[in-house]
Image 1 (cartoon, protein in one colour):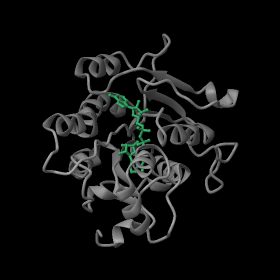
Image 2: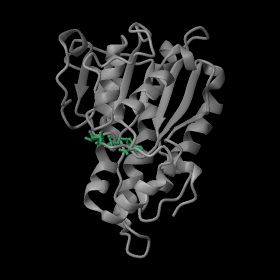
Image 3: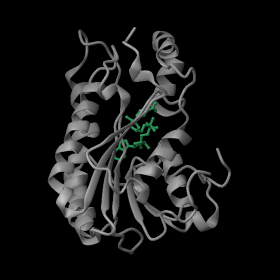
Length: 268
Ligand SMILES: NC(=O)c1ccc[n+]([C@@H]2O[C@H](COP(=O)([O-])OP(=O)(O)OC[C@H]3O[C@@H](n4cnc5c(N)ncnc54)[C@H](O)[C@@H]3O)[C@@H](O)[C@H]2O)c1
């Protein structure tokens, strides 16, 4: 990773004055996204039951706060936002909300458990409904025509392309894609942009776990990426930075596919 956490493609001040709230910011991709947002000037509120794992330089660390909110818990989510996202006694009003936490519980259809189906949808879809509904009043406080607020979702290329054996994961990501489009339409005239980032197969986090543990996944994943290499977490962080920056002000209802061409192939 770039030791300064910055992307060479964006100014180090492009997110100055912005406050981004992210769910799942302590995970394999989330931590790199958080570091990127901080390195470009944003304040970040990280909602994750796990502590933020990266060592950050002090000026970046000073702009990060974390709260161990379980985003599947309706009461916890509602109270956190109703109290203006108070962390360590201080309120934080986000102008950017990144619904990023997610899970994959792999398995073929024939033996897939209903428990895993419900767990996947609970985090990958229902929790983001709770977060968006609770965050909306705060986004309205910050949104103006000159400086729109933002809702961003992390989906996946397999939200549109089937990947055998990933259980409820693809359906849950397809659902988030459509949830985002509906919100984009509904909130467009309220100066809130809603977009989706669809990464490919990343050499970190949940995909790396499957790559390491399941030889058939590894074999299929190797064949599925036209550019011939796994995506990096930094690539996902750069796309996130773009979608949080003024450069994407005119985008809403879009899904930004950054997948090394994986979705170009028919599934093997
Ligand atoms: N890794 C990949 O290849 C890949 C590819 C495409 C999309 N994605 C998406 O990126 C996102 C993150 O993936 P990752 O690989 O970094 O996963 P990860 O498992 O490393 O991180 C997930 C994070 O979510 C947090 N989390 C789990 N349950 C939570 C809850 N109830 N409340 C709040 N936070 C909770 C976890 O503590 C963890 O820090 C997911 O939405 C995933 O679908 C990942």
